[in-house]
Amino acid sequence: MMTDIETSASLHQYGFMKNLSPQQHKRNVFFATFFAAQVSGLLMVVLIIVWAINGNNASGTHVGGIGPFLSFYYHPVLMTIGMVFLTGQGAMLFRVLTHVDRNILKIPHLLLMSTVTILTALGTYAIFVAQADVTPMRDLHDWVGLLTIILFGVQFIFGFLAKFYPGASPPLAQWYRPVHNFMGALVFVLACASALTGLALDGEKDFSTNGSISKAAGLFTICFAICVVVLMVNRDFARTSWTTSKSEERSPLLANAVSTSSNRGYNAIE
Image (cartoon, rainbow, N blue to C red; front, side):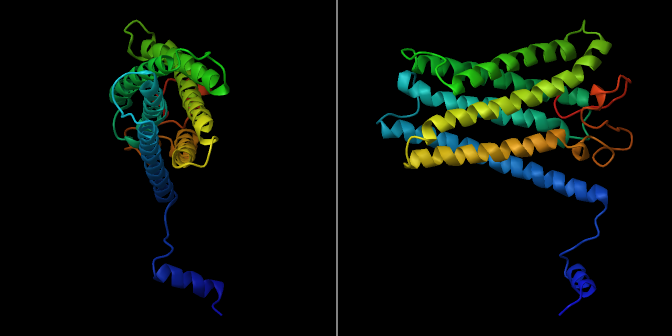
């Protein structure tokens, strides 16, 4: 039997264990989480698209065109890509591109959120076309989705005014920053909850192929949500000295919520 010391020495010898600094360990965990988020997010989107195509083909139709039946399948695809996947990418943007100035990152973040706005509008229109003869707001998915869209709209408008409107005062923008961060996280979580409740409406019906696909899409949605939230709220993953140059230090996530000092701290969602 090998002693604990001999086992540890053997592991080090064969490279199974490495003496990593705390910064290197944080970096490795960060990129592993980010990689898991990308893989689960892409699989989520692919499965939703496959689910929509299978649903269309099952009724002898094809993806494309506008009509009550086809519009129904546009809704989950557009909303998942926009409200879930792209919103998550916008949240992670400031975590990943740590060497890019946050004022520059505001532009791609705005473009992402603008794209989300367009996709959300199209997805909402699609479901109203598909269910024109159905009583609206009849289940939990409808209410969670409506709440998510309203909060996203408020978040987008106030975020744009605080960060891009020339007349916005710096103190107001500084005060609004933690509110924007919190609201962004809340909207993302609600969007994932809305997607899951929508998938449950289809996945709970039977054990068909399409029902199994929707269940798998729901599981990957959960994985994507967990990874994004971990990257957003974990202080170890904030834009601190382990991720930025020495000339660009960042404050931990939500630090500005309890501090009124005018520093350059910034968080995941801007």
